[in-house]
Length: 409
Image (cartoon, rainbow, N blue to C red):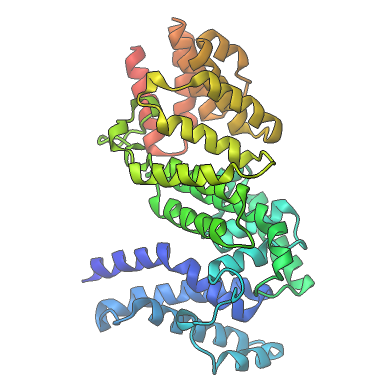
């Protein structure tokens, strides 16, 4: 019984916690997001303590919502200046039973409402994305740091600054005016993209893939593309990118627990339904006149998804798209991905010449090792694979580097 409860609570923490926080935070306000997070965490801990002995309630998520709301009331009543706010919470529906849409004219979704609230112009774009990843997407500080290539201490400081600035600005967790939604949409798109990336390639831990993050990011991206205010070429391109990439999730890790490179993945196991849906979004994204990073990334994903085999992939076109992408987004991952495409199109020597020096980056070290191995420079290749293995973020990545080393031997 206890093990079953632990599995259920783990599942609720993954799938429901962000929704509960969003619904509760809407009622508390932006200055009390931390209270909402603490209250939901308390509810999850209470479930672990009580359910093994009293049994699982008929509606577990509603139970968590009620306990979280009561915990928030207790926390607020300790602060005399918040008594009025606490009283306002009492007569309303619980967070899990709230029915009225925060986006009655817009998106009828608590999490989306909170996403747009934390992407308020009062915050810098950097703070918006960081805060959205923590508050709505439910990522931990180390996960956010991995996705943004930043130090965990810096991420923690950003979160503190974000909460203070939103509270000082008096931002409410409510539907922004329709004209304000498009302005904030790019920060939301970026947050959903990083959330998906964390699910597709975890920044730490034993598992390389966390599908629940990918599923939630796809759901929210499609909601963004469907809504009349935020719909448009960029939102469709983001949805296309996430769907086309999610189609490869079943083959991301092999049966032996080793991360599988794109060339090694059995394409017959890719999800053709997701590919078709992604291509439909990509078609719709072509109706605009502005070429965005989402269009370029989605085109690369489509070129991979529609190639019948690794050998038939249009690598020259992918290399060309990466060159365009680097002008709009000179991020480390784009800078590292482009030499790989060049190597596939023009040979390992060309890829090696285009590869920048990024000491300590496992992807850069692995790419250099692959290029050197293909050029017959085994000793140097081994050194870079060893460096990649030492700096790998997850166990499946370390096993992949060990496989490379074994092949060299």
